[in-house]
Structure formats: structure tokens, C-alpha cells
Image (cartoon, rainbow, N blue to C red; front, side, top):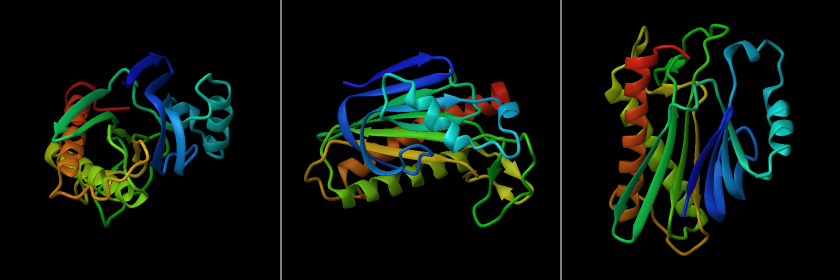
Length: 215
């Protein structure tokens, strides 16, 4: 049973047990094992030029009782988050999302990076059934696709076209180790990943556009 807790400036997703986690998170990226996935909120003013955020984050996590954990950084107010669940067949998938679109981009293009304009989409997708390593990779691709669809549908327009993500998005997939070999769009698992992820990102993108507008 997963559990979500907020201890500002930290948001902690307890997976209930140690799981395999695949991500490009700034702390403990790649394929690793962890029981906790952490968000660390930072302010734009903290991210000064020359600031080694990755080294700093590692030191911050090391002081937490959840260490070792997978950890992500966001300048989004971490109180603004959505946890969605989708069930299809034997698969139950949770997705926790924080969404900021301040540094949004259109795929295949780049806007000039403006100091202080930081924002990100951070996702943790938790699957109740055991996956192979190959299925973890496929699951990551499905979550990425769902993230992109939700951002496009949010209709955030840029000079380069409609936003498809941000320059600093991060996605983590967590599951027990097991024999499920496929997670594509034709599978129960792919459907559940897509629905949970889309709904979580869509909810937070809408909130950001309507209530925040800035990081």
C-alpha cells in the first residue's frame, strides 16, 4: 500500500516495500532499488548560476530517514500535486504528479533559457505487479507518451508552437521485480499506466494554468 506524506519542502511517496525504480531522476537515476521517491521543492532564487544542484540534493537526501531514495527537484509548490489511480485487469497503477510549465518547450525546438524561469513536470508511476527490465523500459515510454498527450491537451502555447513538456521533466517508474514482459498500448498494463498518468498530469497542468501561471 503506497502512502503520500508532505513535510515541506519535501514530498514523499512511500511505495510500501522496496521496489525496482527506473528513472532519470537527478538523484539515484537509472535502474535501482528504493522504497521511497522524494520531491524536494526549491525556489527559483536558490538556483543561482554555478549552483551544483545535484551535489546539494544528494547531501539533502542523505539527511532523510528515507535514504537511500530516488529524488527529484521542483520549483513547483509541492502542495500542488495529484495522485491518480487506474485499474485494468490485474494491474493497479498510481501516478503522482507535480506540474509547472514555466520553462515549457515544444519538441524539436528550443527557446532561449531565461535565468529564473524554472519549472518542471515530475512523475512517479507505481505498478502493483512485477515487471521485467524490458517491460520497465516500455512502461516508461507509455508514461512519457501520456505526459506529452496531457500537456498538448492543456493547450499551453509558445512562440515555437504548443508545449509538449518542459526542459527538465523527470519520470520514475516503480514496480516489484517479476515476469510481466509487456506494457504497450494493447495491454491492460499500458492502458492503466496511460490513464493514471494522463489524468494526474492533466489535473495539475490545468491547476497551473488557472491558479498559478508562475513557479
